[in-house]
Amino acid sequence: MIKLTDHAIGGYERVVRATDSTTGLDACIAIHNTRLGPAIGGCRYMAYKDFDEQRYDALRLSKQMTYKNTLAGLKAGGGKTTINAKAGKKSPEFWKSFAEALDRLNGIYYTAGDIGTTQDDLLELHKHTQYALGYRGKDSGWATAYGVYNSINGAFNYYAGFDNNLAPYALLKRSVAIIGLGKVGSRLAHFLTSLQPCITVYVYDIDKQNYDKAKKRFNKLDFDGMGPGRLQWCDSIEEINQLPIDIYAPCATGGMITEQFASETRAKIVCGGANNQLLGDASQILTDRKILYVPDYLANSGGIVQVCSSYNISHDITTSLKIEWDHPLVKEKLENIGLKVYDLLSQSKIQNKPTDVVAKEIVEGKLKNL
Image (cartoon, rainbow, N blue to C red; front, side):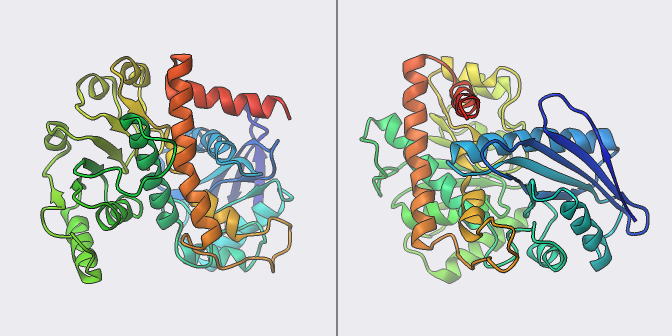
């Protein structure tokens, strides 16, 4: 039987631990803010050492979803679920018990995919609740990657002094380093090498097989210019960090932009799909060195933009639509992320503040005025 236990956390509207001794479910659902609409954020299924670690992950990610959804212009608040994979294995009964927990929240939170949660999982969840999104069509990694691609374009247009537009060949003869070739990183490589002429993309992943798979997949699609010189493997992050890269795109784990990295990097722009990239005062150091940093929750907002475009949040289980990232209505919104990046960088320079500080002030100002 499902059991809900509330945890009072300052600054959060509701934090709930949902457990089921029969199925092994142990979920932490953090709802940060619902002023703009019901909280939306994915369900992360992974192993946590204890509940404190699990709850901390849910808290920081749900807050980030508030910033992401607000900056993206969505009528949605921020929330997140973390499920401890050590407690229970996936099964139809497991997802049914999680669905019951969602139903008991009465529509203040919708979940979607995240690390460890597949579309099949979401489809199973959808059988029992209307508060599950992202169970149809391609996974949102394509939309996230295209949003990051447009963020890079917007940032480089600003760096180069171009007008606030998405010039298709802005990155001519430039170089990009992608760290992590998962669902987002590999697809970012796809967009960069297929849509930009003469660009060089350096990549690293902890598993070189991900690079081999990406090369095989891209070559099979026969994109122009997808030769060996366009996509180059590096044996370590340290190797990449020694290169005179124009754009650094972290797309793996968080915390990669350390104070040391910010002090030593040769990149002109940092813009990637990973969550929670900054550590310490890295943002201020980048600003002082005139290196452009695009807040991760803006750059990687494409996935939630697609999810919200594909579903009518109306408590009607029959209203899901199969709309992919390249649907004209969705694609335009993803391209607009680049325009938002350009504007944010402009405001950062005018106010002489790091971009993450400016973004935070924009979000908090918008929520305060509701």
